[in-house]
Image 1: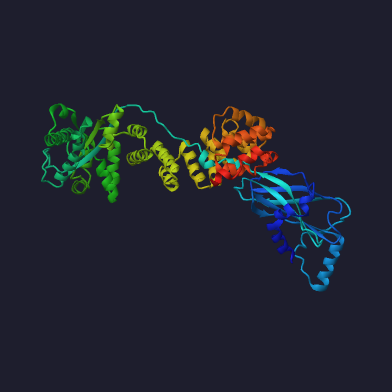
Image 2 (image 1 turned 45 degrees about the horizontal axis):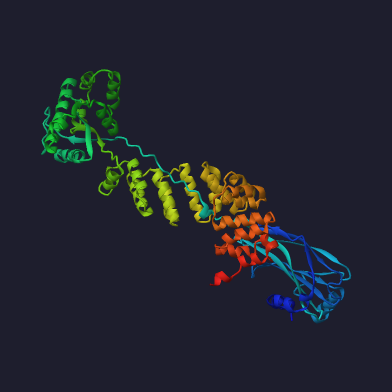
Length: 592
């Protein structure tokens, strides 16, 4: 039988062989390993084994080969096969060499084989580096010792080479995240809104009455009416002011044009009051005035047209800027281009500009807020809508209100952050990210929530990069500590979390050997979850308190994952033979 086939067959039969064969009769381990260390994976998920394997004198006959085959086991499951140690007695080595030379024999274990003196005790180094699965919680490196060529029972022994403890896997960053939920202070304040518009009207020369049949006058006035009617007719709004300004041509005297413009504004007021059926006290809020159009629009039109006399007009306006339009008009009329200006550049439409302000009613009671929200969300300011979110109990209802806020107030960082948090809690990561990115700029709270998006995707590298560069909040510092623990940057994680007195901080302190600090943290911690009790069992194990280990495991094993983990936890190895420990981690309850 070839050696490799032999080894794989041996793997399945070794434990039964040990139970009934010659190895079971040995009072002590045939092979000794010192030290049997507890190893922790590094930031690259590697473990480094540096052990010494001792074999007694004449551990193998002069005609045999001894094979030490370490394997990484988690419970009864094989995780990884480790490099072999193959030791050949002198006669076995010679016979193998002759077979190779005479028969063309291929020794499949030649790369591992070394010839040793079997007449004395041997202490040999065993060094290797293994890349273990990132989420491996714990395990043992167990070596099977067997022989070839001796004619005796081949399965001689098993021996522990190292234990693996990956305590940081007790931390799940996604479940332990601290997210920034922003609760804004609700302050009732007046909601004053402002707006403005214009109507481009045509008037008969030197007249101020509005003829709706002239040009686009009807459409322009009706557009103005639509804007103002929404304010005047809304029971939730109060008109504060409406200022209407008429404008007249630059052509003509300043005094005449000013009066004409004011009269045109008054005509617009009378038409609006009649159309809106405004009572006298409301109509009294409307003021009228004039805004001389001046010659600047004429200059702008000439300049845009590339007129050759543009500089001449510009020079006049610059020299007589401090005076009213009459001085400038007197000189412009005397330019040779005046007929051209009058025909082409004096505007035929006259503006009527208007500016308004109004107050939207504030809602003072919670009942009033909720009742009105269902009918008129558009009547709320941002603060009132945020208050509505605090009154909604169902997360889906809260999300609906936050979406309403972002519809009316798209730059609301509170709504964006809190909506993203709710979406993350439902696992809707893509939607959460889209909400955050819609604002363009991030507040510190949003940066922490954005990092949480990466954590939910298990993209710890980008989350760490974001929090290291921008994480100024306590929650962000905490989350960065969780991430550093997950990537096994344990010293950094400890510095970030050492001031937080909770189970996660205790796990990190355990991972860096701060056993006394861990005990103090958990004594002050009210956490009684199975995970917290498991950590207390680890603390007891490191203190040599077997009763404490068993006692805390009684509560911890309610979590079946922790129960399974306890069976191979390196810190619990010294207590593995205690009947009460065995009872705690038995499979019976799982099978019921």
